[in-house]
Image (cartoon, rainbow, N blue to C red; front, side, top):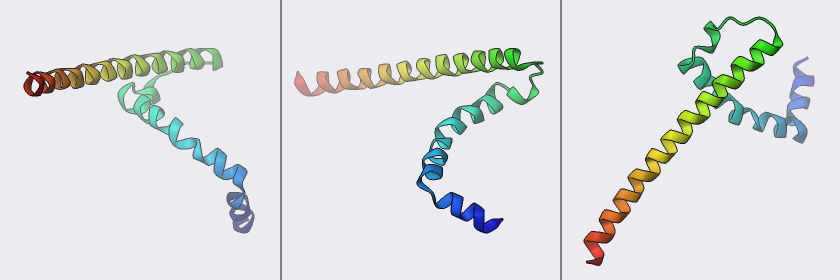
Length: 87
């Protein structure tokens, strides 16, 4: 069994599929930590999908807000630099 698993892991198809994992695990780790996704009780695939979609929306809104805040901070620093060095 171990030999079969090792052979599977050597294939490029497996490596490509496994490489996608890290891009998905980050947001789900945040869902589990910040949104307590493990404590949510929903029954059925539709309700579960709705709940995950709401969590994903919240995650993306928070991320967008943080990106905008970071961009504002960099813009302020850049303007300060220009004022100091150009004038």
